[in-house]
Length: 345
Image (tube, rainbow, N blue to C red; front, side):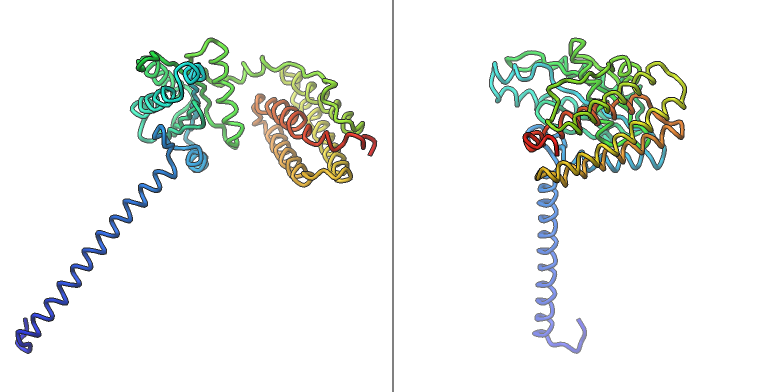
């Protein structure tokens, strides 16, 4: 200490320094404790508490970033979906406690057999997903086959062996998550239909072969002549386009047929929106936004046709899964009670 201080002053200064150092240590300890608690809280927020896999919320948050990264750098990105076979039977026969134990053991097995860069999440129930960056479909199928074999060899107490069915699809440039997931999901259900405990990959050819003509069902009638007639015409246009693609006729014919369909869809949507507003349908505004989404996607597909980048199965999924099933058979049936008795509006 400097000579200008007496011993009491030196002691007082040392005490101040000691107290400050103690406070710094205390603050550091509190900061570290808070950091650990935040990390624990974050883990609770982003992981499935039963299996330890990431949860669906976190997966959906992360996957958009991976899609953007794949687009920016031109690297492949693949999705693996798998579902445990006969899982309902396990819960029914042995109880949910045994079912939970199976889920935990299977998840642990997956986590020990994937790369650190892969994202493993529980999608819901007994369904799981694995996101594989920088992996094309061929290599994702190989990785899925490794997982399938590993899971099928696990011997669960009391229950025995439990298998899983897998579906694999590589992301396509410009494809949204919904469409990509649907392709992987279809591949998984192909594994189910072929006997389970299999890995199936998305195939445009298989999907085209599976697509059959849709025929009008009188049960689809909503009670309004204008809407019902427009829906029948919509089926006619959609079936014509699917036929053109299956026959691989000229590009110009496909463009003309698709233009006709889009023109019809646009007029039909406007007519339907007017009718629903007059009928007092409470979800008319939401229905209009749903129409806008479908039209926007339809125009995107037209752009892909014009540029020569259309993948045929994307068009068929749009027509059959979104326009027919999603629009006509899912959303439109909701307003039927509101049109009964006002069929000629």
